Length: 427
Image 1 (cartoon, rainbow, N blue to C red):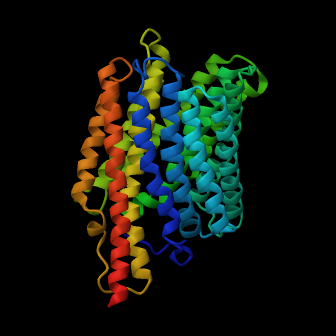
Image 2: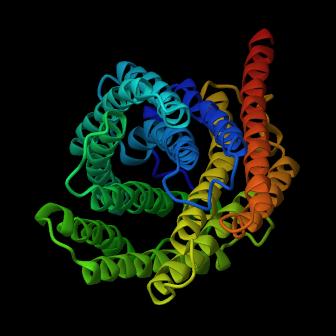
Image 3: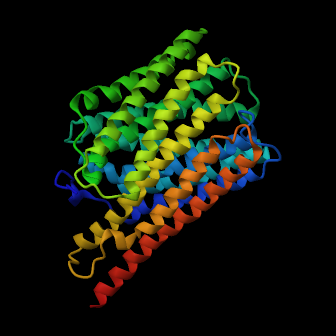
């Protein structure tokens, strides 16, 4: 593991990222409970209250919480520029984000506009503070590399996703009609998933994959062009909304181009993993590889969907594969690699050279493998969930158990950190 390029002296207290990470699994459990509460198959129809609630539990409560927590660590350590007023920034993002991520699904499921009207201002506050702090950090960062570019573009995409999301939430709560609600929803999903989420994973992967997985670095032709190209495609997809015209062909073209770019990233990453220096089975590597395979499958399915108009639910299945197969797999893999490293690093940095556990003792690998096999099973049943109610129920069960396993692993790592710190101080 090569950490020479990291600005480890600027790392925030370990409690900062772990605060976000340990809250995230609760939303997997909540999403599962919401899904099983549905009388019918929640995946059989788009935009039902139950599906909206469960989706936002995963995207806001699980994924956004993890990504915002990771950014508290990435900006000072990888980019070399801490967030301004980091203590205040953390709490002004963490508390409103968690509150809004709980209230928004509750408003959908219970049909209570008052909860939605409480949720969107809280989410607006959390994301605005996060965006402003991130942009200020990136503006003064000494690094001018591909990771910084990808993260910067992801923040711009997040701003657009936030604006469209607030409009949609307000409209849903008040019943006010929007001029082009369908195109606004498409823009929101595109910027949130294809813009912010995809670009952030791409940018972090440029650093994490070579450092933790011992692979060659990403080729320069990819790092120089991929993030700007993805962002450019995202902007092109907004043209029908901005100029109020129906452009079916433009939509299909931009979506196809996005998936070609995403598939290229997956193929290059899988190629790098095959060339890694240490040919030993690793659960975190397998999580990451699974995510890349899922991204390839989502890309192929999305490109084929316009040519298969008679088959229902293909768009829903594409989003499920992207979220659960790609994004969630990558985030599981990153958490299982980064959290043990953070625990080890903060103990070692404190001058504790004796008695510091190694990373496999902080998070035992057999637990990671069990989680990986459970996640694979969950993805397998997800392929049938839009058509088969029993598969939807099994998917919910898989998410619930995964939330429990991940939460247990994270709390176990915190316990190791505290016990080790106490034991060393006593000696």
